[in-house]
Image 1 (cartoon, rainbow, N blue to C red):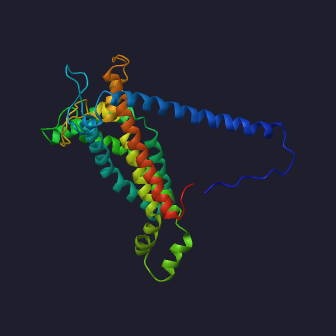
Image 2 (cartoon, rainbow, N blue to C red):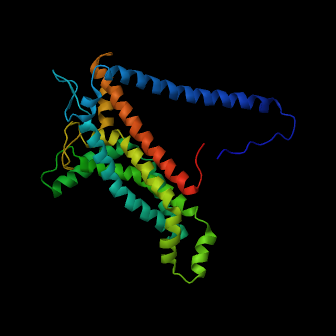
Image 3 (cartoon, rainbow, N blue to C red):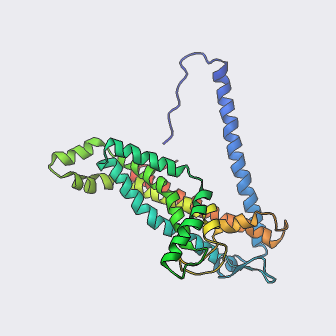
Length: 303
């Protein structure tokens, strides 16, 4: 739905006449930056796939771009990204949804204000600090519990990424719960239903789309996380599902490839853009799915 444009109520002054062109320049500049980035990624990715088969890229299970005989099977990187993102979401989603419900319905004003402040503080923690804590605090704790935990492992990365996702899930889910009309809740209470049943049968279904979108947005953010997985999960491009072993995600490879050690124009250089294209497609797909969930639940389609 397009927002309404205010009609002018008086003769526009100099500031009003300059505002429109200035805003237009800002909008065009932002759009131009996005178009240039996508164009560069698209061109370099097409150049890479002109030399490497897409079937080999997406189906093979070995990623070794710097080997004497290079292998460009992205499946280990994609599987590692999915493992960390889904594992972190399995921790952050239930904790975040339950905390949002507690803040919205059961917490007193002081407690709710304190929990919101804690979530705001956690959201402001740089991810490099979370990665450092995962490497030097979480991993030693895990190794004291399980002897088979490697120094770099997926489980500690999942826990740190979950801590990063928690504020996103809590804040967006809390806002979705707050948008449920109060008369709808009061109607359930007026019928004699206890508050717990009203929350379960009325508020949660009404806010379900917004909460699902919050989870999808958190998943998209987990897919794009770089510092935590680079520090905590290691750099082992292997196709394995054990959370106690190290792995290399899409973003970790991009971070490694962007150090400048790869010559421009080589296949290794092109693989950076191909992996970037996969990452952009997955992130945009998840964000688009979140928007679609909200749009369908709201009863309108975006233009």
